[in-house]
Amino acid sequence: MSQQASLFDFEPPPKLTDRIFFAIAPDAAAIAAVGALTATLKAQHAMQGRPIAEAKLHCTLCNLGDFAGMPDTLIARASAAATQVAGATLPFVASFDTAQTFVNRARNRPFVLTGGDGVIGVAALYRNLNSALHKAGIPGNPASYTPHVTLLYDDVTAPPQGVAPVEWTVREFVLLHSHIGQARPYNVLARFRMPSA
Image (cartoon, rainbow, N blue to C red; front, side, top):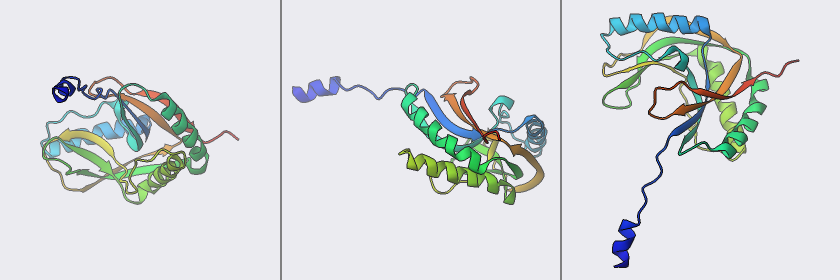
């Protein structure tokens, strides 16, 4: 009887509604370049996926996770850690010169921009931020990291190909809030820049 009652008393886990992550975002000129490049590559590969909205174009850095509601204490701790990183790593130029599909699932795979030497600064920022988060007791991001900007999702698999570089000077990184499963724009929770002299 008690076992049967416990089955009925089971509560499903709360629905995850909020994703929190650090990212860098392209400037206006880079956004325009991404739009033109995406249109060309989409036609070239006969892709059907919808391009990522301009306001959502970004390169993810460290991910804090998915939550049922806003984790205010975690956000405050992560922001304090990120503040220490900005002065040591900014500014730098990010340059993405390769388009390819990430083959990480059977369908609806990300078609992305990656880079070689042009994303060394992005990788360094990731390592520094990840280290600062670990020191603040916020683990969870892998040691390996491939900087990328997602252009669209599609079933077509495109092998790596060189493209005209999309680049911009990274003067800040941001902490973003995404509403999971919704088409709403990201909320910028905090901006981290090199301190003014």
